[in-house]
Image (cartoon, rainbow over all chains, first blue to last red; front, side, top):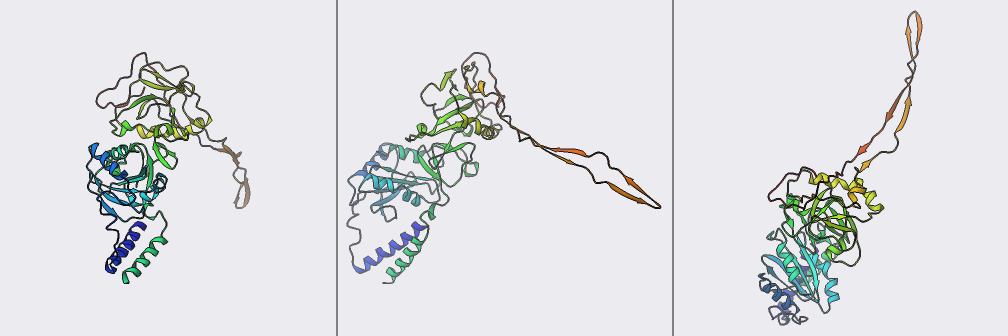
Amino acid sequence: MRALLLLAALAACSKSEEFSGGDGTKAALASPTEGPADDGARADVIEAWTKGGLSPSPLTPAQVPVGKDCRTGTVNAVDVLLCVFPSSAEAKAAEDAGLGWVGDTTGTSQAYGKVLVAAADRRKSDPSGRTINQMMKLAPR
Amino acid sequence: MRSILLAIVVAGAALALPADAGRSKQVRFVGLHPVPKSEGGGICYIEGPHVHIYGANKLEYRDHRGHQHFVGDPVAYGYDGPKHAYKGHHPIKVNVVVGTPEEDVEFCYLDGPHYHYFEPYEGPDFELRGDAYFYVGEPGPVYVQARPAMVKVNAIYEPIVYTRPIVEVEPPAAWIGVRFGGPAVVVAPAPAVEVRGPAARVEVVAPSVRVVVPPPPAIRVEAGIGINVGVGVGVGGGGKVKYKRGKAKRRGW
C-alpha cells in the first residue's frame, strides 16, 4: 500500500518535471537494461535466465521505493524487479524493501551481488514455484 | 504547481503508513513445502527464502530465523523430486538443509517409515540400513520434552494415502525407536480428591419430628488422564526398502 502511494507521488513529480521542461530521467535510462549505476550486472542476470531456458521480457525503468536504479519486466509471466546498487551490502539491505514490492502474493526478494532480484507471482502463473525457483538458482552470485 | 502539492500530500500519507503496510499478510518460508488445498494444493518448489500469504502449522513446520521450514513428508503431498527414506524420529539440522551458517537443530516426530527431500547431516548419528536412515544418536531432553505434543503430527498423515518406503530390515540396537519405543503417554497431575457429604435432612412430619441421618459421605474423585499413543515399533525380517509403484494404503509397519 505504502509503495503504491509513493509511486503515485513520484509519478506526479515526474509529470511536473516534464511541464517545467526538466530533463527527467529519460537520458539516464535510455539504455534498455542498464542504468547509471549498472556495470552489466543486471544484464548478466538476464543472460543467465535466457541461457537457462527462461523467457525474460524487455525491462522498463521502474520508480519504486526499493532503489534508485530499478527496472521491471516479466519472466514466464512472473513479475520481476531488478535493482542495481553501488554495493552488494546495499543490495542485501534492500531485500526487505523488495518484499514490500512483492506485496500480498507469492514471491521472493534476494540480493545477488549488487543486483536485487525480486519476483512476484501476481497472475498465479507459477503455482508450483518452479519458475521462481529456477530464476533464483540461475541468477549469478 | 498543483501536481507538486498533490505529490507532497500523497507522499506524506505514504510515509505515515507503517513500513510493512504492503506486506502485512506475508508469511516467510524457506525450502520446499506443501501448498494448502485452499490455495490449490501440491508442492511449492522454491528452495530459497520466499513469501506466501498463507500460514504454516506448528506440527509440520519449524521456525528457522523467522522463516517457516517444512519438516514433514513431502511425498504425501505430491512431491516428485529426489527423496530419502527414514524410519522413526530423528533430528534435522535445518541450517544444513537451507544453507545458513548458524546451527539450528529441530526434530521430526513422524513415526515409522517416511520421506524427506534432504539427506541427514553427516556424522555418526545416522545409520543407513536397507536404504533407510535410522537415527542412533542421543536425542537430548528437548526431544523428550516436546515429544508428547509433537507426535500429534502423525494424525495429519494417518488418513493420507500415498506410497511410503517399506523398511524390512532389523533396526540398529541404538535406534531411537528401540530406546523410546513406548507411546508418548501424557499423565495428568495426581487427581484432586474432594470429599463432600450431603447435609442432614430434617423432615417435619406432624405431629412428630423425625431426624433423617444421611448416609456416610461419598468420595468423588475427579481426574483426567490423556494418553497420546504415537509410536509403533514393528520390525520385520531382512530385506531392502521397497518403493511400491502406485498408491498403497498404510497398513502399519
